[in-house]
Image (tube, rainbow, N blue to C red; front, top):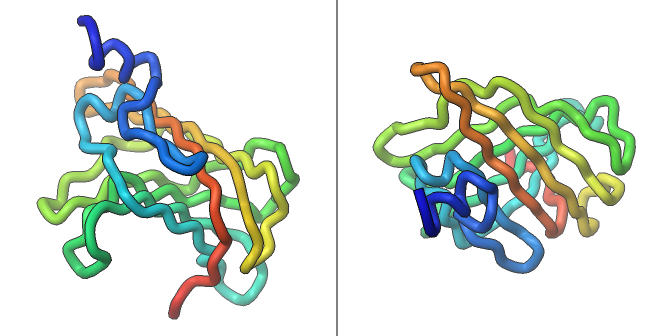
Length: 150
């Protein structure tokens, strides 16, 4: 394998990056990781921040919106700069195709988690396919932490 395919396996720029944000990894050779909007939300129930959701979306936001990646981080034991567990990582497309099973993953925030404030961080996820092979997805994110719209 040469060219872009090899770069994707190495984790270089498959989904592109913009404004300090990006998606890349070997999973981008199988799934479309392109996006044009990044949203970071506190989706915690009960007013205490325990769950952050990061959406990399493409196209207009409606019922059939394509989400290149939806990453959910468990921040109940938040320590700035320390890896935290991923609760889930999904690919949501109108055709119903999703990433394989999440085997492991972490999310790290370089900033405090305050709704309305600037947040920055990264994540890594490893998926296991039905054939037993593994695919990786890496991402960087930076933006304003929004409160979930209920």
